[in-house]
Image (cartoon, rainbow, N blue to C red; front, side):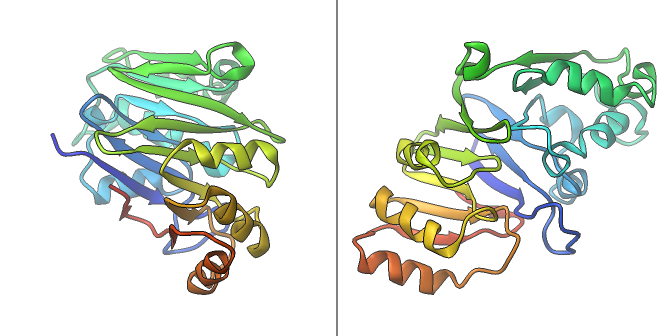
Length: 247
């Protein structure tokens, strides 16, 4: 099995044709999962010909709509699709309170109409706030770390070649500054950061690759990288796009 990390959606709540909301597809030899499942991500999966049974694990960073809104369409299709019905179990890893949150999403539609008896759904609360900062997806260890202030979380995991970290929403502060040092490649929420804060994060990281995703605005990435390098950054700044493969 070849390994890949693909940005399915680099956008936000903004309605944009070329940017779906937040999601990253992780396919590794040790384990595979979807990190967040915001608006248009079910379409992105279909465009990549990713069938239901290939998504066996979903990790939710937090409960903002642009990170979780396509979960219901995904489950609805899993149960009722005539071309791609789901037949294997699904595990959903969520922050504290996530089990009740997802159950509440199902109420208006009727749980029995969304989740078929042909497969099971297990919802597991993880993270620092519930005393489980690490969990396993098959044989892959994933760290699930709190990035305040709005219940946001980031993940860290290891491919066969490098460590990768991904934030959900993230605001500039000591938690984020420490988080980006945990991996060689970091996919960050740049939408809640100023240009100056992106530059400072790059300088403090020192090297490696920072992928700027969750885009509310266009970035002059070459200018940002040049300014960071003048202050000692030796790595690479990249602006994300939908379908971009990281590794």
